[in-house]
Amino acid sequence: MTSNYQEQLAYFFDRHVTEKPWYWSIQEASVFDASDTLASFAFIEQFCLTAKTGLTPFSDDQIGVGLNYIFNHSQMVHDFKNADAPFKRREKALRSLFFIFRDVLDPRCDHELGHKSKVRQSKLNDFCYMFWDVSPLSTWIKFDNSEQIGLSFMASLTEEDLERMQLPEDVLARLRQQKTQSKVEIMTPEAIAANTHQQYQNMDAETRGYYEAIADVMHNCLGLGNPACVESGLHGLGHTAFFLPDIAVPIIDAYLKNKKNRNKDLVNYAKGARTGMIL
Image (cartoon, rainbow, N blue to C red; front, top):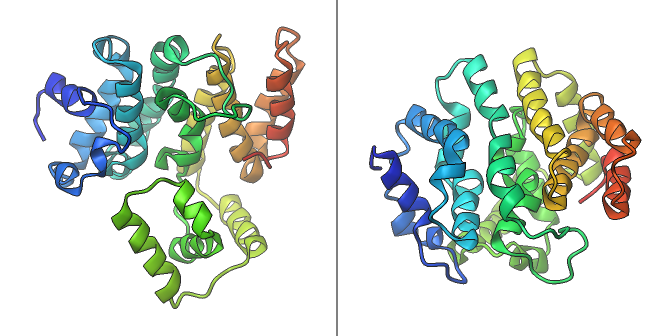
């Protein structure tokens, strides 16, 4: 990949917006060199700090597609997690994710709630709402049985679920093959939940620090003016509350106690997030 930051931005965002995003092309995505994980880390680190000005030339849809690639679908986001960077630097970079919400999503997203929308949202709103569901940056614990959990989850998906994920055909084919050919023992949803809870309880201090950093981003989103960003923060906190209630629930409780929060839909959503059972 080019070393020029402006050229990198153009590569990700200066694209024609089509029904199928540009990065579904395997040939196009293979341009990236995944060997230098620190370079990917440094790009995302810089991008969070400068996105407000760096993304000015691009449309909302271009930004939505580019953000979705960088943070949800690229090797770069995994490189960010695996790069040889000290804890303090990585933690600071994680907290700077808030600038994406404050400087890009808050002013640009439609003032709509994803969980209430009956039509497909804009690409930017969709990224905002689903960020904590999809991005690998949401999960920092290294599961002992990640393959078994992943395949168990895949086994639970119906064909309708797979189609709804809107994945490239080659990816869908690979997932279907994994479902039919895997010899890994499939766990029940209850077993997955119990096993995962146990592993969260035994995680080390550094891993917990990463979860505290992303919870801080979610917390800060609750103070933004755009309800889409507030919803995103509550969405992420809801998932965090299921496994780490001691981190997420106090933040949600403070939001519910704040008398300035008058949006009934968001208040009800926060109540659901507090249980850790929202989708």
